[in-house]
Amino acid sequence: MVAAQLLLVEDDVAMREMLESLFRQEGYLVSEAASANAALDLARETDFDVVLSDIKMPGKSGLELVGELRDLRPDTPVVLMTAFGSIDTAVDAMRAGAFGYTTKPFQPEEVIRTVKRALDRRSVEDANRKLRGSTGLQNFKELIGDSPSMRSVSSIIRRAAHVDASVLITGESGTGKEIVARTLHRHSRRAQKPFLPVNCTAIPEGLLESELFGHVRGAFTGAIATRRGLFERADGGTLFLDEIGDMGAGLQAKLLRVLQDHEVRPVGSTQAVKVDVRIIAATNRNLDIDMEAGRFREDLYYRLNVIPIHLPPLRERPEDVPLLVEAFVRKHSGNRPRRFSREAVAWLQSCVWRGNARELENVIERTLALCDVDLINPSDLPAALSLDAEEAAAEGNEHGLIHALTDAARNGLTLRQLEDLYIEQMLAVTGGKKGEAARLLGIDRKTLYRRDPSH
Image (cartoon, rainbow, N blue to C red):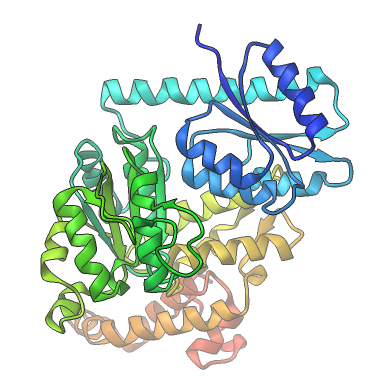
């Protein structure tokens, strides 16, 4: 039986030595790190089976480490150690992705048992992944939605996961482009290697070049040591270039050269380094327009757009909203069983969601945090959503009014029947909130109650 590899992250020397001895006696191969940054360096080189980390450390905390390890090694479980009085912090970390926690001071059996549970879960997930790969059954649990457009996206991912071709993901902000990129990586042959994301708009172009390609010592002011870039660190894995449409022209040319030659040249170096990296790029821009305007290289576009994936905005797939609501409620409810009423879900379906699934998740999380009830009704939702629903209703009226009137005339409906239909539709849009429906219809509540077709 192969010994499990444990990464131990603890700044206290005595505690680290005690834990190292404890787990070596249990048969683990233990690697040590005194800081989160040191742990990340080790994790880039080795796919550890489990990580045991303190929360409070100088510099980057264990909480930050959890998030960065999820990006780097999404399948590696992390167990956190916390002192009494900071259990809430540990629970927050679990919600962010840690497997569990153990409190200090702890009994040796307790920490061994917690780490063993994390290791067992990793073993089960690895076995399930191999089973899915051998049977070809790919259940993309990361992708939420059953609309025709999302089924089409899943179908493309299923085929694209088995090849190394570059992928270009397009869609508005908040549609889930990084989720798609991570899903592609997790179901590819590169799944056990790093997935490294970089936002091309978040880093100035001069620094982005060094971040991507690395630099040698003395390459520029402040380069006090040689540093490997993301291409080298992602070797064998996947590099996700988010917001590629905002990359400057100079850097576009250098990126094109890497895609053509499969090698990088660190800043300040004369030596090229061979790399084996799959590129997944994403943008919320219209690159066809950018190419016509000369802002984006056409040759780079065709190198990236080998496999295109477009994510439709949430307003074009309202049938996915109930599934998203259910998933976000599970994510943010903790152990407390809570749900949204059918009327609340219908109200959410009627909204425009300019921020797409990201905005919907924000509303769900905020509502759950501010409402101390187990069943969420439309009245519990943020007031700003009323304006959103009103705008959606107005847009629907503007685009569909002529067709609705034409159909009504063809079917011989009277004006009274047409009014009743309109009232019925407005009640559906507002999730049954009669006061809100009356306001949108421009009538008082008594008139609405008298004219409500359901009465």
